[in-house]
Length: 371
Image 1: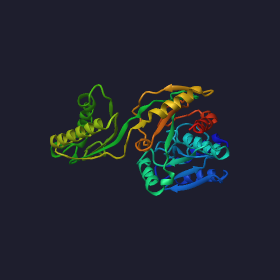
Image 2 (image 1 turned 180 degrees about the vertical axis):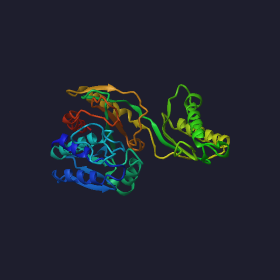
Image 3 (image 1 turned 60 degrees about the vertical axis):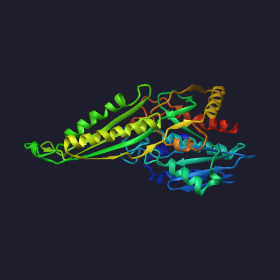
Image 4 (image 1 turned 180 degrees about the horizontal axis):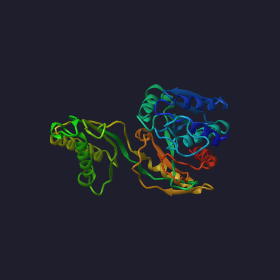
């Protein structure tokens, strides 16, 4: 199969979480073009679960890929740029999907011993598809419940041919953060008759930046980033409303709880100090990706012995990934795969090297053959 062509086709149709209708149909068309004798295909919402029978199976191994895009306006200049204006595969999910299609093609043409389940999961970027997908497997399709689960994520900063992972914590706990402030607007000439939410919001933003430095153990790690702050309507009207949008990332659940407690305490103080109302929405929260130690070591040993592959031990990252909901209940492991892009994840110019598709499906197929 021409995986580069497939990647480029998928790149043109990025869709948001649980809206991946075109993506699902395109994937189905590709999967149904393969030999069907060993294959069972089940649809779940806008995702898919595809089981390929092994030749002497006593286990079920799963491979998970994510399929959704991001609300980012593409600026790559590709001749195959997104046809959906304002949306882009800026996190490499087009590469992930093409790789999974390549793996499926190899499995149906050269089965491994074990049964393999390939999961095409929607909504990784939000609101989170892994948890409901996992619960569906457990309750509705226990015959699809895997003994082990694996996944890959592209790494723009690593060269093609490099894979990287570690036992234990790989990705952080994450939570979205949305804070709305409501006061009293009015004419810019009469500030004493108003409750200015631009000022209240700015004060809140600055105070939030003290949480990591003054409430989290300095031997621990945490991040609180406010990426968007909006207030007001025009230059001569005092803002009646303001909104802060951000993200929280920690390496353990206790730190996440502490962060949220401090956010709520500071918001209550700002309510009192600026005579306003504040509401907090934590949006989607993702559990940390905690790699099974034995599986991670087996993978690193295998990668180190594979031709053309460089295996590197990773550091834990503050990246968020809902794959952690799978590894919470299923022994599993995720690894980084180098794609050598000047621009990083979630960037409008992300340009992964497609060479990764020339060897990665075969590399994973060989790893699965040893399970």
